[in-house]
Length: 85
Image (cartoon, rainbow, N blue to C red; front, side, top):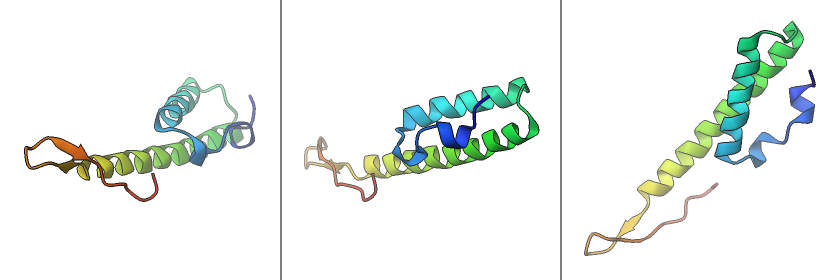
């Protein structure tokens, strides 16, 4: 098994979908139980970072949706950019 910290792409550069896919893979590897203790710890740490990244991306998306501007007719008229997304 390779080192998840050095072989994987930077978490901050990942899309929400890619991070979720990798998180599901990490959970699967941990559940399967074939990793050594050190590998399991590294996987758990990466999983925690992936989860935090997903939460940040999801929170930013929710804020962006909340910022949708409505026209007088009630129709969406555009969005207000959210910092950090």
